[in-house]
Amino acid sequence: QARLVESGGGLVQPGGSMNLTCRAARIGDPYYKTMGWIRQAPGKEREVVACIAGSDYYTTYADSVTGRFTISRDNAVHTVYLQMKNLKPEDTAVYYCMTDCTEPAVVAGRRWGDYWGQGTQVTVSS
Image 1 (cartoon, rainbow, N blue to C red):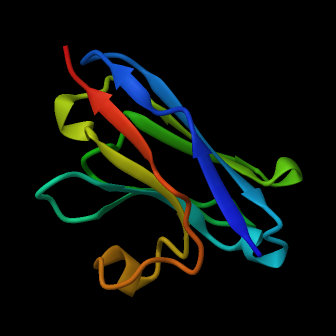
Image 2 (image 1 turned 180 degrees about the horizontal axis):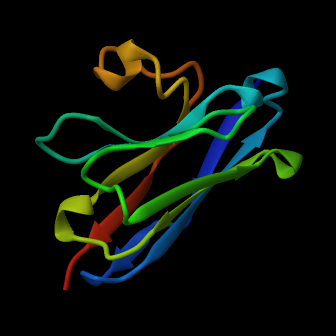
Image 3 (image 1 turned 180 degrees about the vertical axis):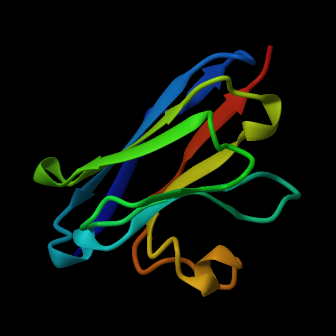
């Protein structure tokens, strides 16, 4: 069974940086789907933060993180990365690695992707 495992969350001060990693295990062909990061904060709607295509590595970002976050992937090791810089308190959320993050239903929050991880907490606070 396919599995996505996130790592790298924690506490960081405003203006700081943090890197998240998502490793796909036993995922096979689905790994080459579009993958990305979605975040969920208490009382807020789920937001697709960044996505990266599996073949041409085309990237998309939410307006709220453009210029601060960078998504990348290494298909050789089945891993997707999220580099976060100049973090703000409003970036505080549980971050999930997920496939299918450009599909309209996923973007709209009506469904999850076909595969997702357990989530990792990112807290930006002084």
